[in-house]
Length: 193
Image (cartoon, rainbow, N blue to C red; front, side, top):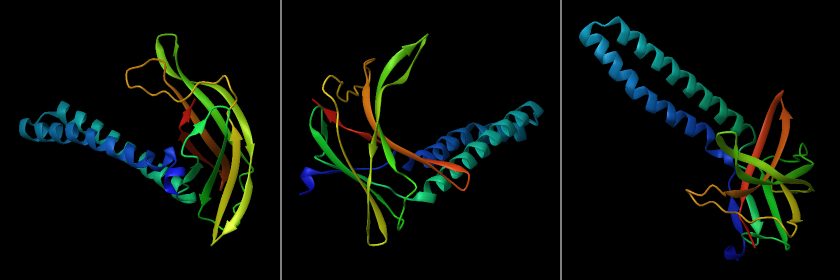
């Protein structure tokens, strides 16, 4: 049965941890500059080390903030049946929320993104978007957000070659506000022809 469905974790799951790991890379030059400033009694190296330490601490706390924000809702796996969406065919899915009677989200957004050149820079740009209604079900102290949709014929499938400038991906997302803080979940879904 598992070969007929796929479980996709949200993009936000590793965001905070990733920022904290990047902050550790800035710790290496901070330590080496601090060591150099102590050995040579150099005030310039000390200020450089303090600058890197400030960046390390700032990025570490930003990562912790993102982790705390993610943990407010917890893990929200998306299950797709079939394991990928086919253009022109019905695709069903569900999102499991670890809260009982979670009713803050009424609709999901399905969007198509392509990698385009904007002036001298490349970035992802939204090409198409639609809203999906949800069916809410409570099961074992959890809420299951069920949905189904059809990607219209004429749209491009997922393409994510590393060196290609023609990348294309699809996302399902929702957003809600809790305690004056915007909480977002985004899942990249595979789409084939």
